Image (cartoon, rainbow, N blue to C red; front, side, top):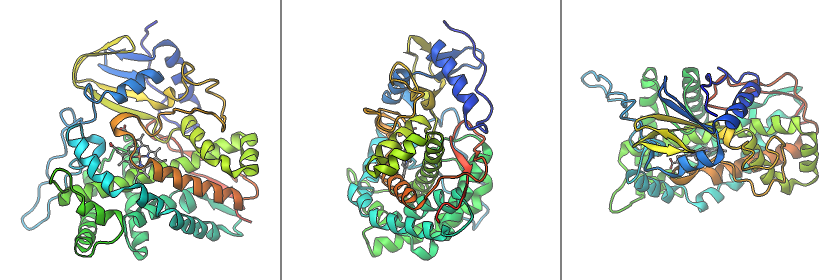
Amino acid sequence: MTETVTGPPSNTADGGRALRKWLAGNRRDNPVLWDETSRSCQVFGFAETQRMLKDAETFSSDFSRLIPAPGPAETAPGERPVPNLLKGHLSVTDPPRHHKLRKLVGQALTPRAVLGLEKKITELTAGLLEAMEGRDEVEMVSGFFNPLPVFVIAELLGVPAADHAMFRGWADALVSANHDAGAVDASRLQVPETMAALLLEMESYILDHAAHRRRNPSDDVLSRLVAAEVEGERLSENEVFTITLMMLLAGHISTTLLLGNSLVCLDANPGALAALRADPAAVPGALEEVLRYSPPAPLAYRLTNRDTTLGGVDIPADVMVASWVLSANHDERQFTDPETFDITRSPNPHLSFGHGIHFCIGAPLGRMEARIALSMLLERCGRLRFAEAPVYYDSPTIFGVKRMVLSSPVG
Ligand code: HEM
């Protein structure tokens, strides 16, 4: 059956209830929905989303022919031009360039670099939990879920501890600029022109720091980024900056959202919370289920390079396709009892880190951070009590809480 379906609920301020209902109806009736009037396509099924993400030749991540890159700013004589953020940004690059860039970033973000952060993440988490001790109420997003990933990325890049607060200020400005604009997924970087001054300040800082690392290499990602080489090619200064910025944005908000979504899911499922307290080794499995149930990035976009067919529906070339990962993760054709939050679900092939060539390169880091943070929080937090109802982002493109107040989280 094919019917025209009106757009998704305009916000997710109700915790996504109306959105989930809307998605379930579409998934049942039209796993792929082509709308002739708007000439746009939405995908609701798991198999169809997976196929779209896997076929990068047909479904492009480079939208520059539809949405031209912001032109080089009009630069007054003597002024520095605003950096081009699309150069070097993995998420919006297609092969063969993507393949090369990904290899370069992979040389920097090695499994060793990630594992080397375990102790530091534990220390940072302990410090944030200590700061909550004895407080009657704590706003968890600003007090824990947000600072942890920002500090971790700062550490990963080798930013000195004294500059962590400044780094956090930038990250917050980037996130609020994106979400106030209301159109971004967690891995796609968009920086409004109004932020030119901030960008130039960040660029100066990062490039100075990179130049220092070029002269005095250390064991951090920035040192490896400036030294990385594929087929004789190194990253340009602009690319080093963009990649750094991309890690800050992509690696920050998604992990923040995952932590908030974890507490929402555990609050709604006391049995799962009790099971985790009894067996902390179950935390990684529980996080996979949180990722499936409430993916921080609920949508993935692609642009068709040619006429194609997806799930039996014809889609012309040059059309934006929006795939609902939130819906794919709840597809009855793929998951048994998808509406049940089951921390022992295995296998759990959710698409919340993407699929195919753009699969999240930071997934091992995001998983490790969330595991440490949730395990230590549960260990220290006797009772999970919301002092007020959590406040959700009001945007269908990111999924999670922006404010969550807990009563006496750490006694
Ligand atoms: C739990 C946390 C995270 C979630 C849910 C998440 C989610 C995602 C998703 C869905 C994509 C694919 C986007 C697409 O196909 O268009 C992606 C890509 C990416 N993520 Fe993550 N991410 C997380 C953590 C991180 C971290 C910690 C970092 C960096 C340190 C990071 C860096 C990136 C980068 C660089 C890409 C682009 C990869 C490419 O295009 O080849 N992410 N992420």
